Image (cartoon, rainbow, N blue to C red; front, top):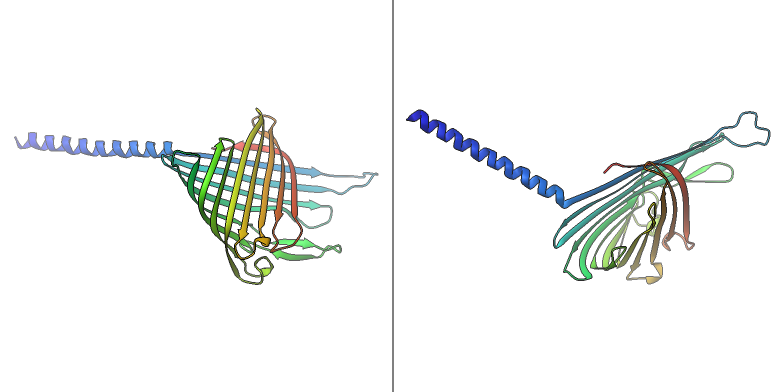
Length: 281
């Protein structure tokens, strides 16, 4: 009798353990289905070499690495989108030293509560900075450091409402706080180590498929300080991406930045790249 009871108890305990493990597995699978991840890595390399070339020329070597991803959690009525972009590139021309050509850290998180209509409340946070020191070069080849990692760093938090009339276009408008964090290079923050501005933020994103292998993406960001609308920050990031085949792609990027706190003129960066692109997730 005791043996029978012991066996029954062991079977009961084993059943409870298996049931608990099954529940955990089901919960884990359910959690995985709520998340969608996309990660794309690309690398571009350019090399030119001359030997006894009568027409002249400079040896050149340049590379650029990019990593872009998005993680989206969707469980009605909540949508949480986390996006990140990293980029770094260097070039060497002739006898000159290695110079940086690209350097980007761009993180953003947007939490949206869907009301079942076009307009939905949101909360967001973003961070923009760079990996290593940035310099400008004089005509005589000497360099002057002008920026570094987290110097400056732009941190923005905002609350507002989002509007998505069609799947390809979404925009949001809200009130927010922006911190410009610096250490040595305080010209970005009006001479302060940390400059805090309250203001109005607007972000509009467009993703348009022109052809099966050609996609245009554009993001326009505005931040207007409440104490001085004349110092409104305008940032526009535009990319035309063409996929040649599964691994080879061509990208044209035009980046516009108008930041009155730094300089009066609009800054423009244009990049044309052909290289290897691979979707990790």
